[in-house]
Amino acid sequence: MSGANLAQIYCVGGALLGLWTFARFPTLAPKTLPNAMLVLLASIAGLAPASQILGWSIGQAGEAGAFLALFGAVLPALTALFWASACVLRAFCGLLGPGVR
Image (cartoon, rainbow, N blue to C red):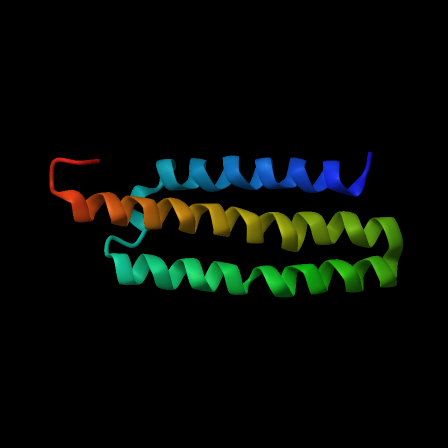
């Protein structure tokens, strides 16, 4: 399996987990657009350390380190990114009016 295929699989997995979390726990999501944008910016900022952790763990522990970093850093960062994206979309829909969901 190539690295590009693995990245695509992790992106789909992160999207499914993020959207499931958004649907399962709707009260955890921010309701206003500024708060949702802040959460989105924080999740984007979390992607850079996740990639650094992945590179470092591959250098230190090889395949085992890559496995741990993918499940311990990359997948949670992608999940947070997609959850935050859903929060922003909901906040934008809230701007349209009270009847639009």
